[in-house]
Length: 181
Image 1 (cartoon, rainbow, N blue to C red):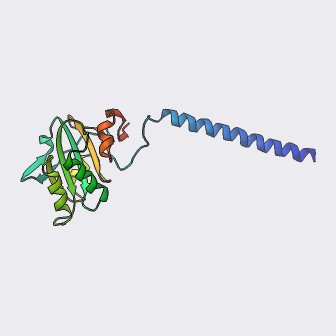
Image 2: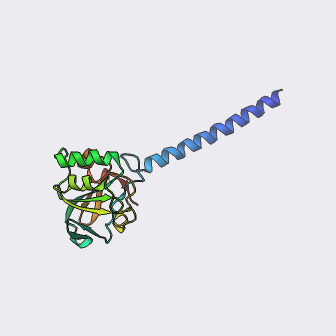
Image 3: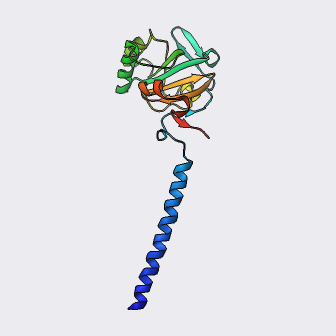
């Protein structure tokens, strides 16, 4: 009987030590992680350089070479309900976006009737282009795959990224989006 009790104590002691080691490893991992919001895999990595792209919009071709020094770039999907409310707020001026030129990309299939109201809503607020979901523009800006996506681009590098209009204007540059290596 006493031997079996010592066996139980030994097993519980090993389990306790193992639990302590795992907890310390988790604490170390959390301390080494960047501060701020949890990583959003649908946002491009902050610090990513914008790649080459060309998109037709506003009767002109938008290219990487034409990217202004500072810009707010937005990506909106024609099938996205939050995109519509974000566009309405942008059109009404209900935002505190960082300074810079505005480039807006509406992601829709060619001839999609849902894209027209979005383009109309954004047309007075910046340059607008319609691109499809496989367009190189999405890859050039770090692989856009969630909507709406709003970026602050400075000197050709993504400095902030968010899905929320208010967060992009309020966040410090280093704290938005995913942080690269």
